[in-house]
Length: 124
Image (cartoon, rainbow, N blue to C red; front, side, top):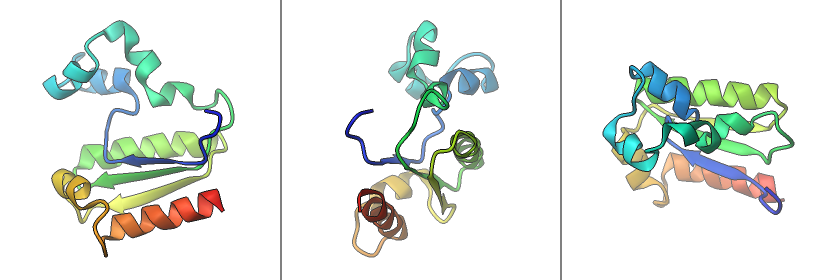
């Protein structure tokens, strides 16, 4: 990704769409199926596919209190670290999925502060 200095990923579990579908009995929940309707493209559309395929910019990953999101975030960041990518993992277990997205960008929000500190360090 030429010109990309850093990535901020906020509370998803779609880092590996094939694994997500497998964990859900071979199919995706409707909201994911709408975004990723073609199983033949799941691998190409999964960020996890590209770990280890080259140098990646620093990555900030946040997750909310939903256990599946924490598991997905930790697995993804572990794979990035093994591949040599600098990773910051934000424990958003104090947030619901809706709150982590709704509050992002608000003055005084812990996630916003952590993401901004990450970005400032990454582009300095």
